[in-house]
Amino acid sequence: MPPREIFFLAAEPSADLHVSLLATELLRRGDYRLTGAGGPLMRQAGVQTDFDSSGWATIGPIQAIRRMPEALAVRGRLLRLLRERRPDLLVLVDFGGFNMHIGRQVRRFPWHMPILYYFPPKSWDKSERDRSSLGQVADVVATPFHWSERLLRQDGIEAHWVGHPVVDRVQPVADQANLRRRLGLPAAERYVGMMPGSRRRERALMGPQMIGAALRLLADGDTHFLWSPGPPGSVDRVPIPASLQPRLTVVERSLDLLQAADLTLTSFGTATLEATAAEAPIIGMYRGTLIESLIFPLMRVP
Image (cartoon, rainbow, N blue to C red; front, side, top):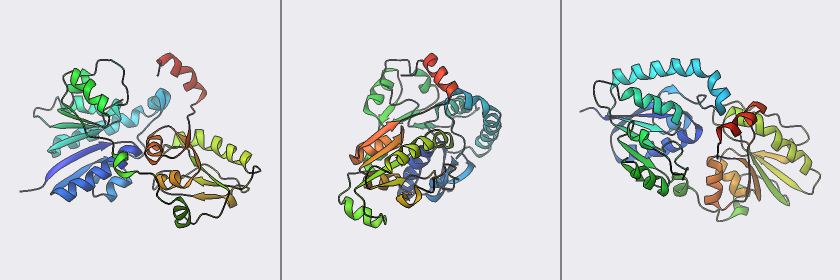
């Protein structure tokens, strides 16, 4: 009997990480064929990625509109593949605008394909609103937040609180001095981290702001800076000035950076959850384009 196939649809760097952890555990427990759309971490964990989704994620309505033709092309190819292959389970991971649409299309297939939604859209949102549309797409929802389970069940959805994977893999650092030695950091009075996000657009908007802050701090005592690069395989286009390079170290793993730094400037996202679990001090920030700053107040984003 061939192994059961699980098809993952993950389109953001954080989803790539969460699915890679899930895939590792599934392969440890049984014989599965893991396929889908994902990024480098999923491939390393043993997932056959039929689609490289590393560049799919967008920020804001303007960027989403620009990527619409590409999204429509991917949608057609993805649905054809699901019809032909008929996986035993489809796992949707966050990325609500795209994944909810795919889920609705799959529900129109002439046979039933079980769907699990892992990290449902806006699971962090505690507001009282109608969530029943999620139940029309997913058979079961696995949510990382306990309040999300209660709110989803209120609307008749079979939801289960499974906890957040960040809590499983992140703890406060036991020996910060030893971690700094392991990372090869030079001696300094203080260490300041900079994490401008994982998406190219985020890094383009926030990276220069963080570099500017670092340049202002250069003259303020003995500070060494820790820089978080983009996702594996990506090209980081944020220029590091020559004056800053001798006092800057690139740290590949975001958790190592958070735990080694005395303070980290970070964009909002998974990094803020990692920092909380690691008990690492951060200053959270975000920045959009001029057009987005005009649009978001109209959208009443909380």
